[in-house]
Image 1 (cartoon, rainbow, N blue to C red):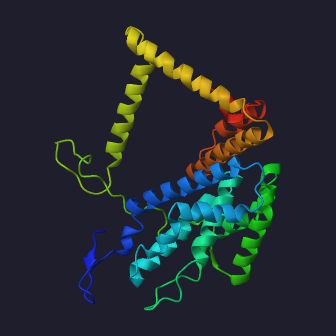
Image 2: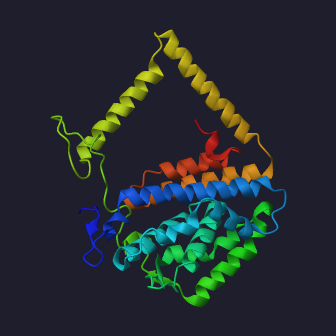
Image 3: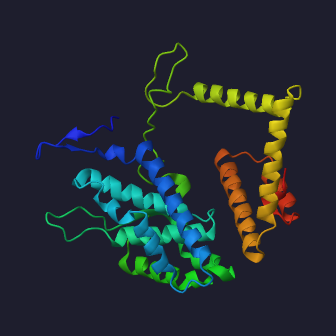
Length: 314
């Protein structure tokens, strides 16, 4: 499907197609922006000894990054519907239970702000959405976010999270669909359209290829990457390469030791959150592949006896 702009018969200009907002061009960029928003808010939150007004601080970060202008990305009704739905969905995917509690809270703040700042009184009127589709299991985990804020440094966020969730329930903004593993959302996965760079999409005969890369091409690239990594890791004859490798390993160990030896309870809670997130994703992957080899259970047992969590493994 083409995602290039199409001419508008009403005004003689060009408009974006709805498929633009489900493509990798928009989805990947917005995911990066949401991650930046979470990082910037975390930095601002951590920089203050006591955060009396966490949501006011979030709004300041939101404005400083230019998020209020997001509503004016597209004004035509048909692509605007796709834009609003996809944007809300990308905020929701950062609120699943496998994400860290702080990440879930910032994503909740973001979706709340985005949804309730839709332009509804413009002239001419702009399209807006009244509901956001959400799988039933994600909805239940969303309601449980306040219970996950057990860290003393995050308790100040609880009242704000509870208020936002009460607003969502009062206004009935969620359209609940079957569980996430049934793929009830449309499109089922994001991004739906993968846009391949013409400069890098080359076939075996040297010709440029369009569309998604073939499975064989992905496997070939993976093998090449693995071979180059293995060659780099086992190379011992070249003194310069060996020295460079040792420097990288030493730098990694220093950074890891600095992180694990950081500032007390807050850091150890972050390690626990990261460990739970990794194990949760592995369990999801195992459930989707229907492979029960006991590896995840073994990893749980190993991590349970390690004070450094997942970071204590080689």
